[in-house]
Image (tube, rainbow, N blue to C red; front, side, top):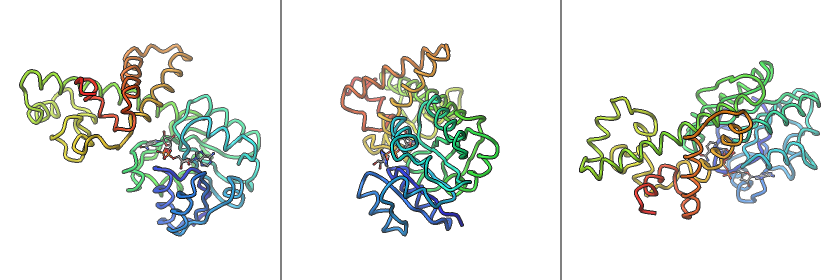
Length: 296
Ligand code: NAD
């Protein structure tokens, strides 16, 4: 059993903290939201009055924050958590952020003699609740070894992607591929409809043919073929289009900085921006099928 400080008890963080407690760890949490702190307390966790208090006497720290500026603020800002802990604490940032920020914060942790990894996650709120998240970690072998038991309590597939920032690189590449695939599958189902081919029939064929992929087989954007997919509950997330757009923007910045050609990624970013402009960014990202169909 370890003591864990948890900062960012949102849609992902709270169920992750719950799984840490289920695995026998003691969790002390901090969030700006009173409701999140009350929820943690009601489930047996302790609340801290500040980020520093949450991390001062713990073996490990997990952060699950909205975006890079929050990660910089919590780690490096005034009252930043890297200043506080006892030696040997492992810091695990599970937020989806850009590679550059991940590397900068991990480098600063190293300068202060602390171990840290970037470990973004995949699997959504469902995976966070079930403890089946995929984690892709970047950092030294020693830091990864220290983080692994903590990650195991929250996830099923845990990968050491490489050095600092490699986890964030894997995450944005994965999500850029996923966004492109979701748009491609949506276009296929929209065309089939115009051609008088039923969604169920296209699914039956394509899910076993060369177009098969997770966006089609497991998360079909057309209502009907996959009962568990958000298409059957009016595109309630799931994984909100706003989060996909955030990840695509990070990927496009990285592509520009690295000189990589990603024309389909750029197109996907435009399409998800249109979903945002249409006021639909809180819908599941598979709701892009409605935008492409001309319904929103
Ligand atoms: P969320 O907005 O639900 O939760 C973030 C929490 O951080 C909120 O409770 C907020 O109050 C808290 N917070 C913000 N600033 C803070 C600060 N300075 N100090 C303390 N707490 C602060 O977001 P989420 O859906 O839980 O996602 C967290 C991260 O995980 C994001 O980077 C997201 O991109 C990534 N992610 C989300 C999903 C998903 O399906 N939701 C899937 C994979 C990865």
